[in-house]
Amino acid sequence: MLNSLQKAFMPVMKNYFKVTILDVKLSVDGEDIALNKFVAKMLGGTLVGAVMSLQGIKKDWKEIKVKVTK
Image (cartoon, rainbow, N blue to C red):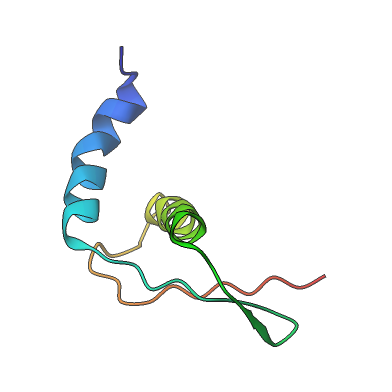
């Protein structure tokens, strides 16, 4: 059984993944890291899902950049 949040986002996610191919790149300390298909989908989908849940983000965004430092 789906909860209310899953019911709300299901149509959005179905439409999003039908038409979108994500180009995901990862670099660590300036070195490009090769990603297999699973990891690229997982990272891309996680980031897109998190960003799209924020207020003010347009559905027709073109690029998301994330920088993590420690």
